[in-house]
Image (cartoon, rainbow, N blue to C red; front, side, top):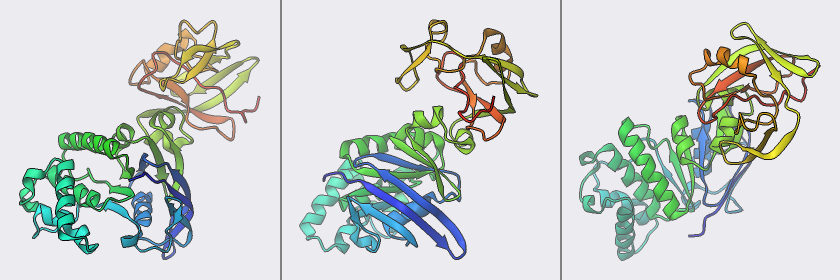
Amino acid sequence: MTPVGVDIRNVALSFGTTQVLKDITVSIEPGEFFALLGPSGSGKSTLLRLIAGFNQHSHGSVLVGGKDVTGTPPWKRNVGMVFQNYALWPHMTVEQNVAFGLEERKFPREKIREKVAAALELVGLSALGKRRPGQLSGGQQQRVAIARTLAIEPQVLLLDEPLSNLDARLRVQTRQELVKLQKRLGITTIFVTHDQEEALTTCHRIAVMDQGVIQQVGTPIELFDHPANRFVAQFVGSVNLFPGQFRREGDRLRFASTQIGEVDLPRTSTCRPKAATSPSGRTRCTSMATAARLPRARCGWTAPSRARSSWANSCATRSAWARHSSPPTSRTSAAACRSPRAPAWAFPSPPRNFAS
């Protein structure tokens, strides 16, 4: 089946007087493994159910494969959903659970047997077709739920926190199996989770949500290295925030904080675009003077050697990025220091609206 894209345009949804989704706009590419990441109550599961057709929005539109499915009932959308609790029929065998959607669609009996066998083989449960869900482990039940969804050959696969009921070791194993399965099928997949590690290690792109609003959409590296605001910086990965002020003194910028003291940030002068690369592999530039010492530093403001020791005492690791958490609207800002990959200390350019 040819992968299709999903477009959500200016969607808003309310439950009574409570607005749950606020002007959501996002495009998911065909064949993409896309994550909706956010804390509990951020609206990510509500958005997923809206795509499936279980929730109806009051404004905007949802397009699957370029077709507006806003008024289309769930059973006609050709979208498959794996629920958080798997929703398996306890009195049915594995084969009967997988065949349920096909029977509802009035497929011929022989065709149902073929599709059930193919789906179970795909998830590695061919030998367990006669068992009931109560005789399976949590990971096996999760794979039955996925097989039932894949048997109907949906255009889009929706996963609503499918790993939350598994123990830590099984969660990692099942996560790897999901990645392999999605890559093998090439099906457009939307994955809801509140676990940053799950999203960062499995998905091509991530939409970070909070309070019914998409805060930022990007690849794991983009979210980690270039968060759009303070919430994204704090929610994705680990971060230390230091309140303070940026002050310009001549051609130098200084960050002053009661927690870490004052740090001089001398501006780099000459850039050589091929002198350095970022953790994502993209070419960045550093000054000629610092290219050898900071081979992967960001272009802009670099920390002098005398400032490193004070920063090191405040960070979990010496190998970390240091940056302000978001472009401030006043002279008061914050510097953040985080991990994992940079081999040297580096600071980003000051915000454009910084007043000298």
